[in-house]
Amino acid sequence: MRFDIFSVFPAYLNALQLSLVGKASEGGAIDIAVHDLRDWTEDRHRTVDDTPVGGGAGMVMRADIWGRALDSAFDIDLGRENPRRILAIPTPAGYPLSQEICTDLARNSDQIVIACGRYEGIDGRVAEHYASREEVEVFEFSLGDYVLNGGEVAALALVEAVARLVPGVIGNPESLVEESHGSAGLLEYPTYTRPLDWRGESVPQILTSGDHGRVARWRRDEALRRTALRRPDMIAALDAQKLDRRDRAALGQHGWYWRAKPELGEHPIKPVLEITDKRQLASDYADLAARTFPDACPKTMAAEDIEAFIAGNLSEEAFAGYIASPRHVLVGLRDQQCRLIAYSLSLLPEGDGAAGIEDGAPVDAVLSDGERIGPLIELSKFYLDQEWRGSGLAGKLMTATLKALSAQTREWERPYIWLGTNAGNRRAQGLYSKLGFELVGRRQFMVGEQNNDDVVMARTLDVSY
Ligand code: JD8
Image (cartoon, rainbow, N blue to C red; front, side):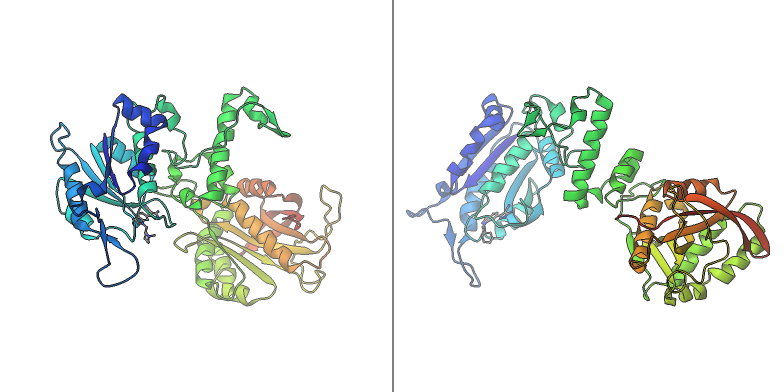
């Protein structure tokens, strides 16, 4: 791999003689040539710039100077057929430089010629001219969304980022694997060394446990946590099919979810929350409710009873009523395509909780903390779209529901939320137990003409959020 770097400040690139890159060019693993652009000027003032055509501040670097200089680099015989020659032009208007691009350049290019501009930049015809030459590929790149005074810093970054990926430059290629922006698509976890205690700060104990499995998990969770906090765009680009149950737990804490059985190309998302708001679309809720309610019914239940219940309680009109009603709290979660993927419907009692209590409400229940149950809110409906069951989204929906209800019952003293679910529905009872609900009783529940045995579960509302 050969680098040719052109600049009016060639000394700026002296840093490349240091450290790994310096050793690599001394050792021949790579070749680095730095050229003073003024060597291709023809006037005694060695002028490389002129005023901008069309007016404007500052000066622009001349195409004719750059043409002679760059031609000299592209005329170099690289000793192989059809070499891949790159003209890399740093500019704040360029494509963002990335590890993926650096990896491709390190693996698949033979010469990278870097044109370091100054002043207002280089005459635009230079990039166009070389892009028209088939033996050269032009790559206008940016180091990041901030403005530098010239291209030299970007050139230093490009050479170091590419050269260290060239086989033979880094002693132990293993160390490249877990780096930030590596194949895992995550930021790297924090690292530590001796002294194990420093200014009262100890190294995380797990790292001295010798339990390699737990250390690896801790590092993975730290990489996920850091990335979720600092680079959510990278989480949104992760391949959900490559994430495991522990990743789901770690990212769920930062609001990222994906379907239980992700499809190819599926990425984690941050579902969009909506809470009782006149703009909620009753039709969306009715659709999701009609699709999911049957899953909570025993298989033995007659379809017409289920349809009768849906028609009577989960129709678009019914949801329009819930949205308009001050006693109902409707919480929804939508995916990136604005599809409604989960909802809960709660019913507040009238006034301070004394009236409007539904049949079957566990008014006399005492929970495991020995406290008598207080004002009661009914969690009437709590449903996830089939594809999102097992995704951890139920926890998010319950959190959002309890928060919304807390906001509406601030002045109440220890409010409680209760629900009824079919006595045979172990999956649902297991989920509610995990979400903090306790078994407090039983009730009969009519679906159409069919009477059902329900268990009644309850929990405090205080989610100490
Ligand atoms: C090349 C001239 C300075 C830029 C007028 C300030 C890259 N991420 C980046 N930020 N800035 C650059 C960059 C800046 C350069 C040149 C790269 C050549 N300038 C100009 C336009 C506004 N001055 C960069 N990569």
